Image 1 (tube, rainbow, N blue to C red):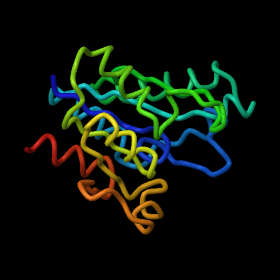
Image 2: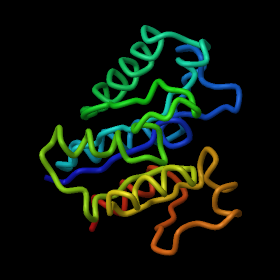
Image 3: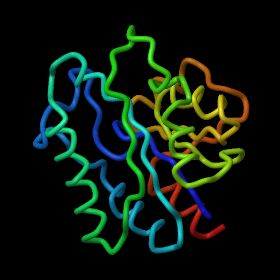
Length: 177
């Protein structure tokens, strides 16, 4: 199985320090929907692991989050592709859960769901927490410069991290490998 795992905010859609609280605020980064569809059509399973502490903070509810993910699936399907498993952490940063990145709980849930070992699997994110979660399960950390990626890059990243401009660049690399 060719598995690619993506963070959501800042990788697939625009990010905001004020949180993405509604379907109207969920705006795909140019080229990201097409990239997911192209990867899917090329035989890749594209899963998503996303921290969503806005739920714990009361900024939006599960129905709103579900609507955002349904929109993602619909847009990718319109391009002929498919989104795989989407897992999210609804907890706040101080709740001590095992799923909130940089902890690897969501990544291990994806591994269990697909019955795969994550060693070497690419995990694409835009934050230090994403990169640390990838390393915790021996996945390949990938940083995109979208979202908080440029800021993350300026603060230093783990040694074996690969860097791409955006999700479209990753799709080109993986499809033409």
